Structures are given as structure tokens and as C-alpha cells.
Image (tube, rainbow, N blue to C red; front, side):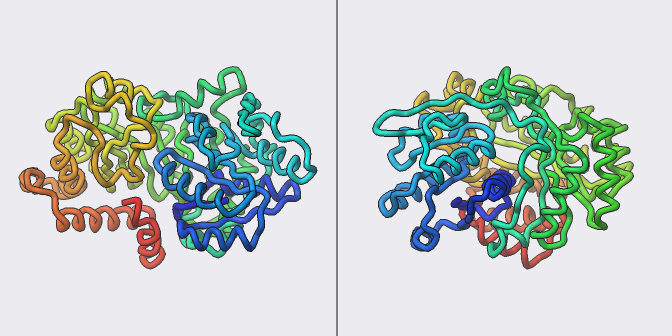
Length: 462
């Protein structure tokens, strides 16, 4: 596997566990240097070279795959969200196979077939290119129960900088919501009739997976990266009860505002919850309802925030600016709702459109994007600039630079608003990164030196 971003990918760790469970070898190369990548390939002589691809990294990964293809006869497979939703990338000459949807069982079947030299053209979840023909196989049912999957294995990251980051766990797969900017709805449609989309690992299995993470990662608060906590409160209560018996380390959660009920917040408050993250996305109820398909009121957001404050739980908010049809006043409404919520870490990002989502269809209809817009036009960062037309790009960049500052220093909001009218410059940008990194590190309890290394390794994505 080749991974370009210095982050712990749960998908890669599950594939490592799956491959090894079937008696195969799995090696991860982390980095983008083509010479080093080809040296690793020459050393390992793999039968299969894989990429787990998100749309924002597609161009970078295809560039690497094209270089590799010149030097090896090994098959190249690409999996992850991008080929799942954009299977036409099988037409890229450097790509031999794509995996759509969940990949653990498909990878096992593929590696077994390669080892036994049997045909691979009919393996479910795979599209296979052979002699100019593409064999398009159907998706297998969703893995259920999840406990039947091979155990996650993080050891592929040993020797990389990733173990210095926060350990992660992903005990819930699937999301029932249909936000207009997310790939989730399209993925759910692909799996229609193929099983329950939202699934939980058992508490026993989740604890075992957490133990596996703690074996590899440096001691620091565990981040639960599933964002559907709150659907099964009994399961959640038992999980956190068991977690507190396993370790003294606190944990970090992701939440939908609708799920952060009084009962839910009371449960996590009993245990070692260090902080939570919730999606505000916009402070404009119009934007949330008409553009984002998120249906909750500002009063609900304030109520949720007050619950966290009453239980002394710190929280971050996720917010977007530069949305189609969004006005300058509505950007400041997003800032105002964060002030009202007294968010500990208000995270701002510039809206990044992803093809095959409803919000992109709307943006095209309204003239914010050309009809020719494709995944090749998607930037690899949400902290740079907007790709929308008919907007003031300089204003949006400055709104991002002073988004957090206007919230954590509300008395200076008027001053920061005046600064957004100036030309963006390096001082504004450095100020933004300083505030952003300081709040982020503090909220997740990350140690200073490993966090600096993390920022340096991922500097091309900011």
C-alpha cells in the first residue's frame, strides 16, 4: 500500500489485518517521494500495489501510479471513496483494478487468486481491466456482523511518524444522514438491498480493537472517528464503562447535534470524555436547510452547547464558509452562533465541492461551477481558497483567516471584520495557522513535538 498523507487510516489498518489473516504479506509505504517509493517496490517485489484514495488526493495518487507503472509489472489497485463513486478511473492506463465499497473480503479473495494463479475477473466489489475489457462485478453484501471481519492491525504504521499521533478507533460504520455535500448518500444508494448500512462492532470487539491501537500509538487520548454515536445509548454506555476500566486515557468523540441529547451527554459525562466535535456547518438556518440539507435550529445548537458546558465537556465545531448562495452576512451568522455556543475550538474551512453530490448540482445550476467541473478540479486542502465562481475569493480567504479569532475574541469582532476587507497576506495566514494549531492541539491533548512533526509532514495539504 502507498499512502501519501501522514494520518492513521483505519481502512488501511483493516486491509492489513485482512491480508495477514489469510496468510499474505502487507507492507505500507508512507510518503510521496517517487525515488523512495520505487526503492520500496524494488525491495519488496510485490504482486499487488494499492492506493486508498479520497477524491482530494486523486491527482497526486494517479501521478505516482503512472510513474510506478513505468517500472513494474505488478498490478495496481485503487480503493476507497473515490473509485467507489467514480469507477470510471478504471480507464486510467496506470490502474488495473479498482475496489468499490468495503475492501477486506475483496482483498483476501484477490490475494488468494494471485497466489494460486486463478482468474480474478469475477471477484465481487472489483472492476478488473484485462486485454482492453473491463469486468464490472457487483458489490457483495455489507459486512454484517462486523465482528466477523479480521481484526484491525495497525502494525503496518510502525516505522512511520503516524504512531506519534493520537490513537483512533472506528466502531460504527455508516451514516443515516444525507448532507448535500457528502458522498454518504450516494454510497448508501450503491448498497441498497445489500444489508443494514449503519452497523456497530460489539463492545467486546471494540475494546479489542482499542487494545490493538494502544499497542502501536503513543499514549494519548483516543479519538473515536465514527460520527454516529448516540443511536444506541445502551451500547455506548457499556462501551465507555469498559473503556474506563481498560485505560486512564480520556477519549474524543464526534457527534451529530441531533444525537447529543441530554441523556446522551449525561452518559459520556460519566466517563473520561475529553472533548467532542459537532457539525454546525453554517450559522444561517436558510443555508443549512436549503443548501446543506441539515435540519436543526440555532436554538438546538445553543442547547447542545449548554449541555456540554454544564457537564464540563469541551467541544469543537465544524464550520464551512464560501458556500453557494451564502452572503457575507450569513458568514458572520456562522461566527455569531459559535460565539453564542462558546465553542472551545471553532474550526472553519472553505467549502470544497465534490462531484456527484447534490450541492455541486445546485452550484452548477446557480452558476457557481461550470458544467465541466470534475474531480480533477478538487483541491487537496480545505484551508486554501475557493474554487467557486461569482464569489470574492480574497474576502473568503480572509474570513477563514480570522474566523476563529472573531469567535474566541468576540469583543474584537468588529476589528477582525475590518481586516477581512484588506488584501490577504502572509501575516494573516500565519496568524490563522498559529490560532488553529494552538486550539487544535490543546483540545485533543496532543504533545507539542509530535504535533509539530505532524504539521510539517502534512504541510502540502494546508
